[in-house]
Amino acid sequence: MSHQNLEDRRKHKRILLPEHQFLRCKGLDPKFEGQVSIIGAGGLFIRTNHSLSMGQTLRLRIEDSNLNLEAEAKVRDVNQKGVGIEFTDLDPPRQRTLQDFLRNLRP
Image 1 (cartoon, rainbow, N blue to C red):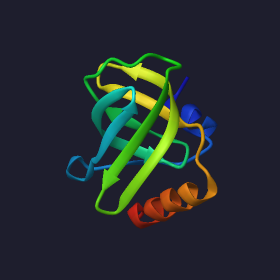
Image 2 (image 1 turned 180 degrees about the horizontal axis):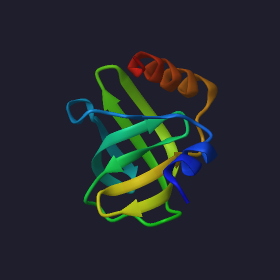
Image 3 (image 1 turned 60 degrees about the horizontal axis):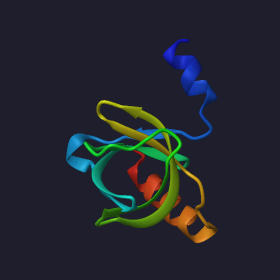
């Protein structure tokens, strides 16, 4: 499958953050730490050395000077660099907070 076909299947656009803009991420349950390198309305990619499993449910907090977001999520991809997660329960106020943050990231 080509890269383009994979992008066509995604529900939400993703933003690749430059290394100097990675967001700090903390796992609240289970506990872990990492840096967000890709973010979108549906989820994010967390660079971490902590061992997380496919399908695992997480509670996490993304912390930045422009974003403080706590969310429930599920691990959808695991590789050597980290984990891809999908937000599973963002209430409307948290969705607005995330959307506002994403709008400010876009050129």
